[in-house]
Length: 427
Image 1 (spheres, helix red, strand yellow):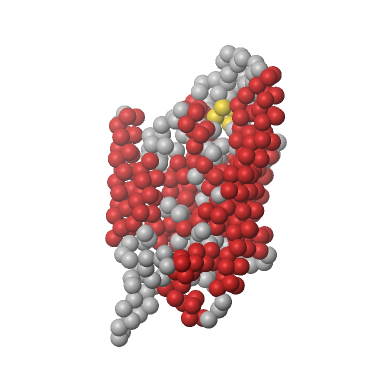
Image 2: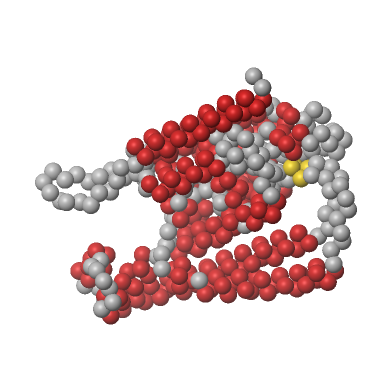
């Protein structure tokens, strides 16, 4: 069978599996919280959120996470086997995805750590382990967590059939979204407004065989896109990838391309669907204008200040997601006679007999906290933009192919294709 026929067969198979997953999820996605009629025989509906796990199961989860990270390192850096990496991805998807129903995940643990740091206490040791173990691994051996241990990455990696190379400008622009997502998630988690990462997890509906229809459609759309674009969620949305991208370049053991072993055959470049192989610069890039570089350096503090100001200005809007603020706004609207319909939350509050002044004061505190965190998040995004502009203005100089440690997902695709025996580990 020719290579084209094989790819076509796998592409059709992947599309059929994605369509089957969507059909199964929609079949199980009946309304889990129907309006109660409180008639005789009424029973409380079951929740789609997993309940607390027994202590020994929590210990098992952490042990399996550490084991999977170790096996990923063995498969990629020692065995240099793409097949072994795929089987680790399948096992991680089955356990951390479908068995554990995607909770607690390392991506969502960002919110747990943020809430504990902002408000003190309340961080379970399981959430801490899921947050810090992949980061510690990235600091030592690169993004092994992304290679197949993360269920969100695994489900996308397994449906990838015929990857297309995105234009560098589009890929660079889309890579800014994880920073925005991380900033929003931290602001809302720090104030206790929402766990937005968990609420908008595109694949948790498949893991739990149920959920809102729009979320299942979004997840199915990402999986369909993932058949031709390598891991769109991991590369252009995942907030945890920001942290891994920062730590991976510091790792001592990771996939590298040695200049002495490289034959410039470009097989590693063609085998990488995530644009993680930096190509040599064949012609000397023009030296950037010193004036332009000086302007960008001087503009960096202005961009940080502008981002902080925009974040502060958006604080009131972001605070509206908090339950206390939303309730206070509803009470004000009802008192002013501008509310068009009744509200259960407002009615329940009035029945408590608590003074509205206390509610308004609490809402004002939440707004102040949100403004502060939003200003910090905006300044952070301004710094990210400033650093990106300065890096792009620098003169490029590269004579060999290099695996970029920040974007390399340690998927092991490039290792078997290298005729020169690509060294996987360097010290």
